[in-house]
Length: 109
Image (cartoon, rainbow, N blue to C red; front, side):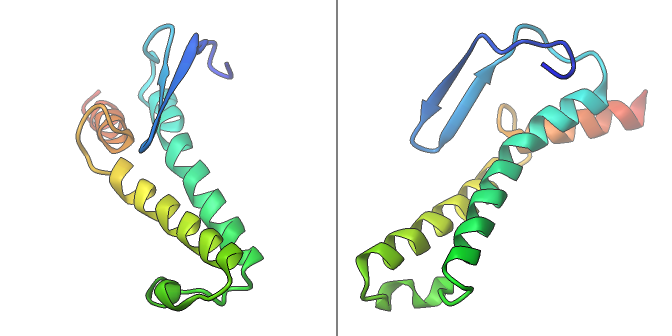
């Protein structure tokens, strides 16, 4: 909405969500900001969970966590980190592909 582009709906999948935009952004910078917003949400969720856990649960320690609540939160943080990495693959229609397209459009225009 910030750029005057409405989102009629968002479809959620097990590996994330896909927002259907009313139209494509006209400026590469707009597309970049829109595309980077998705992975930033996953980064924020993972960081918040890591802070809630007190920075005590590393990825290598997840299997040994006894408390089911702490284990769930640690795994949820891990899933969000995985989603960031997966979505940043520079292939369309993932966010990384849209970021690459915006960067190339800005560079070549």
